[in-house]
Length: 310
Image 1 (tube, rainbow, N blue to C red):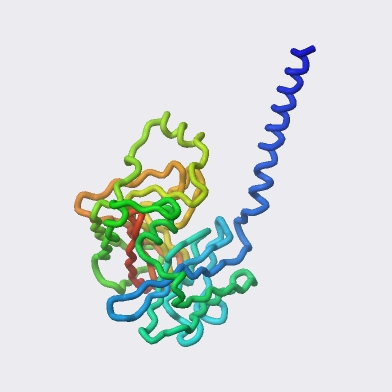
Image 2: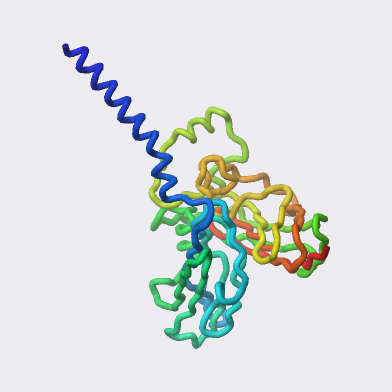
């Protein structure tokens, strides 16, 4: 009788676990969307500048995993008060994008608010920027918020880290034709900090072990390692970059080409620091392309404008 009862309990446990696993996709689908959702603008904080001005830092959360909406500056994408165009993106990458751009305000800004309004897929959202003390940002806050550090932690290495320096070679304004790739050379100089958490290669057994390992932290986790990413920031059509570069957004899926993905490996760093990439445009118009060099903890950005004809 004891053996039968034990066997029944074991079968019950197996059925219970199987039922739970079958239900997991439904739970995940309930909170995950590929298309049709809104974009939430985010005020990340502010930091003082050497000339006495202040920089408001913004990002966003695109609730979609695949849709990348394009929203021109205007009634559905604007700042107030003052100029509606403050250099914000009009192309929104999937999911969470932190510290995407900054807006400089004068030294006498005081206690006023700067408001970024977005309306995507019929849903309007606002982000309110102020100089309240609670929103003061430094390098440790950036590293912590992006997942390079554990929440509320730091180290001598992280405190000594200096952001990469990005230099896009050539003209800031360029011309191209639809379907014909243009070459972009970007030099990235970095201090080597923080030290990469992983080598650029890994064994099959280590990959399997990492896939089966449960998450070790409740906050977003990021793999430290220098990388460069190019993406469309503004423009009417699609831009294809070759070779494909790591994503600057928090794609946490296991095999994602993103520092937030469980199996991501830092790419090889060119000996001369020069990264070569081509960009190909699907439609004519004016584009702004955005490069981000990220060492895991800190980042730096570069931009070029490309006028594309038929």
